[in-house]
Image: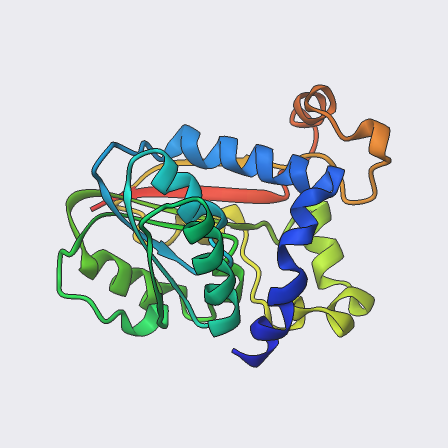
Length: 223
């Protein structure tokens, strides 16, 4: 938890860069291509961080509960939600021990958090427990076998960032979890991490999708 707390203060500044904003755009597009939110749907946002997707879901009319292990991240999330006058509940909680009754939610959603989950089977079992029958469960994470995965796994990068604690997964790894309940999958972020600013655009993203592995992967299950 301590290492995530240290990241909280500058976390959102990433989205203000051209690359960060582009990544958020393509990851959001992929997530909502697979996951179909409905107004009034009660959604659990797992590893919500500073509330990026909690806010997006709430703005779509969902009743959102966000959880994270970092108090500092959650403090940022609460302030952002309050500034937007959005009614989102945030709790300090671990995915391995969700403090909710069985079948408490209509859906579960987790973006850019599962790279830090070392026991994905255990985590997914707990997520399935707290959602109702026919619920959607969306997980998005950095792809291990991509140029982005190579960057995050490099010695220099791991030494100085929170990603030294990560456990990256491939799309095959993700889809092997509860595969009898898997209904869809996808990938995005074909733009490599060393792209020049002028090359960060949807035209190149689409072009590179024909030859590169996506740096971000998503899977959708239905209970």
